[in-house]
Figure 1 (spheres, rainbow, N blue to C red):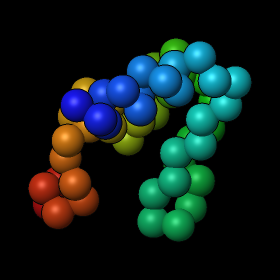
Figure 2: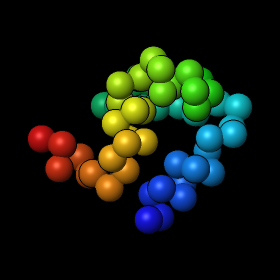
Figure 3: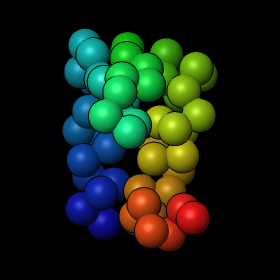
Length: 55
């Protein structure tokens, strides 16, 4: 539940940076990332997953 609150709270920010393997995977506003970043979509759709769960 806390993860969902965090996602909802960042929807209106000007810029979100998605970092994967110590590199910037993508950056932009919420709607842009939903459309253009697979990693961000996964985080938004399944916020309860940890890195261990993904493998």
